[in-house]
Amino acid sequence: MAQRENGNNRREEYRRIRSQQSKAREGGRRQSDPDYNLEERQKYRKKSFKKAEDMQDTEGNIRQTRPKADRAKAGRRKERKAERAGIARGMVFFAIQMLASFALMGVLCWLDILIMKYLLIIAGVLLLLLGITLVSQLAVRGKAKIIGKVFSLLVSVTLIIGSFYLYKTGGALLHMTRGTTEIHKMVVAVRENDKAQELSDVSDYTFGVEYARNVSNTERTIENVNKELKKHIATKKYDEMGTLAKALIDEEIDVIIYDSNYNDVMNQAVEGFTEKTRILYRYNIEENTQDTTLNVPVQSEPFSVYLSGIDTYGDVATQSRSDVNIIATVNPKSRQILLVTTPRDYYVPIPGISGGMPDKLTHAGKYGVDVSIDTLEELYQVEIPFYARLNFTSFVNIIDILGGVDVNSELAFTTGTDAGAVVEIQQGLNHLDGKEALAFARERHALEDGDNQRGKNQEALITAIIQKMIAPSMIVKATDILAEVSDSVETNMSMKQIRTLIKQQLQNGSDWQIYSVAADGMPDRRECYSIAGTPYVTVPNEEIVAQIGELINRVEAGEILEGSVKAEGK
Image (tube, rainbow, N blue to C red; front, side, top):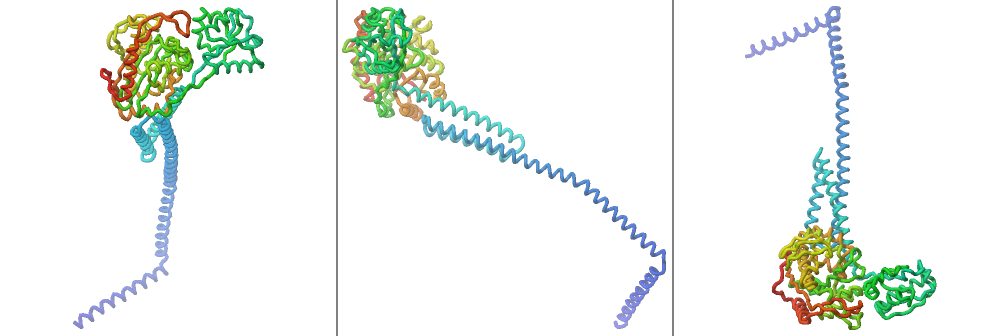
């Protein structure tokens, strides 16, 4: 063992000595051998050149790569900037849509004709549309953003237009419920051949006046004339309009002041009065009518409405004869409507006007809607708090906007040109447009029972209109209806009361029962208060009048009348 270890030690010592000798020889060669040193230097230079070339190649690659990287980086920055700008524009569209949504909800709340259920549905739809716009601008890229902006723009425009028309509807409703006024068209007139050409030419004349009709309006006109002439005019009083007209034509007086709404009365007193006279001065007076209806709870208690169809076109506030005289008694709890029509020629006293002397019912309209209501209240011994006046313009327009109505006629007949159109009416159901419906309601000469049957036809038409209008689908046409007829329909029912009735119908959606009855009488010729001679009149059937008064009381008590026609509310 010891010998083996000694041998290993000697071998290691030998290798160490050999290594030292080899290094010594190499060192000596580096110092003494020029070729060796030259080779080493050449090797070193090659390595240096190679390293330099490698560095140049790397720098070239870096120089070539750097512009591409810079351009890519700049492109990404531009894309991010464009995306942020697109989102900003999208938020502008979103903000506009949100404002348009708030505007629509504001107008709907102001209009106050929709129940809460419908308001919540509309609000939900508006929120959904806003959500779609928001997602399209924040969560998607590319063309989807553009589509989102177009979508938002279309929604906003639609909402703005809708808000405008709803606001217009509210304005029309306010205008229609202005019905606490009437317009009196006061005039100063002379004979056609009088030399006076203007008001100042008659300043020294004595003015004929009549105070029985309306003292206040006559006095206001005199006061205005005094102001225009800057002096107090002389006046002479007459007892009635007919006497005043005769005094002017007979040259008893040279100038008169009167309400031109009574031209028919003047023409009855003096044939061709309006052609024989000339108007020098006009003065319109807007007079407030009685308004005791604001506290009537129309949603819970029965009420009656006087429906007056006047024979004029244009402004319904102008006093005129009433060709349609219907009382609609409504019980909102029992859902019963009673329609009572009274012939225009009914021979009845006009309270506060005729001094107990009978006159045609239609003439009461010349003295104001209040006088017509007072006349019917006295006839049937009932209370009528509300009225609605509509003229021929509104009648035609309403029916056309509704798309026509289906009227059930008791008789077959043909209307004449005097009714406005020649229409073949079949017994039973007839689909009529506005012009045809007006002819159906006005025709009486082709009817054997004349004015009595015309009243029944008018009730049939009113029934058809109610049946069409109470359907919930008609709410979409409310704007068009109100906008078209706001100048030709007038009522003293407040906007709040109308809103209440609309909301109640939308909420309940219940059917209504409609019962119609017509007063009748015997034709005759009698003296009338408003016109001279013995014109055609209808002498009331007192038994029918009493029955109608009883029917009104039964409806107000909540009774459903047998034989009523159903108007479906759903």
